[in-house]
Length: 114
Image (cartoon, rainbow, N blue to C red; front, side, top):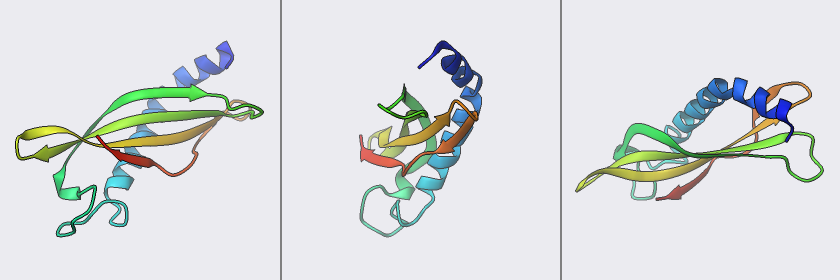
């Protein structure tokens, strides 16, 4: 990644965080991805507090590609019998096109228990 591309991504950081917020919210509010109340599978919507934090960010140009892949890892907070703790991990994938300056959702959000 060039210095100009890094600077452009720094300028887009607020927009990146807004996109991540929207995609995390969409994920946890989709009944086919999160168990609705009364269902017994992971993750369970009612365990989520509605809060999350960014755990890590990676920015990589894949070999032979002109675009840059972003992976923003979010940890969603959940309630458990002992209080609150990390519950659901989400990797949000975005794509940045340096030539046109476009930032788009790259692929499905990946989830994991944490």
